Length: 87
Length: 246
Image 1 (cartoon, rainbow over the protein chains, first blue to last red):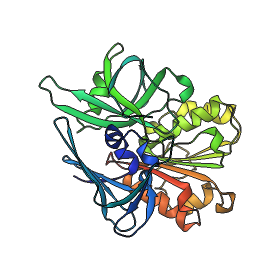
Image 2: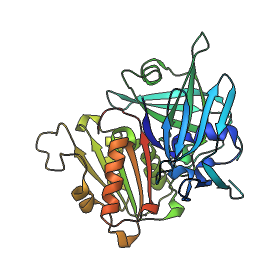
Image 3: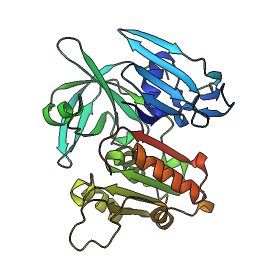
């Protein structure tokens, strides 16, 4: 089963890996070049993990899979992450 | 701000809100404080080590610290919510991490006017905003459009009635999509562009808009607001999985 959710839904998983408030971090899509905060991206939760997609062109920006204490992070769809000081 | 860690909170109170929803007040010793609209992840661990994790919105305002209240809807085929709603008792410990998410957040300092659009239990994070607004004495003009299947399924009904009377510039509009109370003259259909045209602020008032509910509900509401001329950058959405229509 696949639910379309918002970037918010991936926040916990991402903040387990990154020491930032990740929904406010800006990501640039390699597919179409759109830059949005991660909170405004589309998220799909599967049994196997979390997929973050560009709401404009549907490119997969981030994939996170978790198995027994290990995170697998695939960020090939992100051209640039912009992280502000304080986040 | 750093990486999130799991911690335990203790249930200090529970309150039945509707036949399917319950509020759970937790005392979390190392709670760093939250912002209205944020959520927590809750993790249950079975005896065999199997773990299930779900996200739940925080219903309480930051000012209720060190307590944090979640309002949880029981999904009959859920792995986590039936336990939280039916089994959890005062004194039990619950594993959680948070607060999470700085995007779907409104604080009185962010001004308005404010449009809140709730579908079913999507009211929960919006209630944290409404409660925060009331506690700090904000007079930011606020319209809440709240879609429920029936009058009985409205969460926080009495409190919303009280807040409308006791605070200024708060207006609550209901729509009941399945069943209406006798004599009901308000909306009795799913939200649509026409309804939002009547309830929402005019785009030139530059409102901040927050929509929370099941995915189809959120898509309809956000597309309608864009159709009406609202700035997509001022519309923030929080979708949740299929929990029945609102």
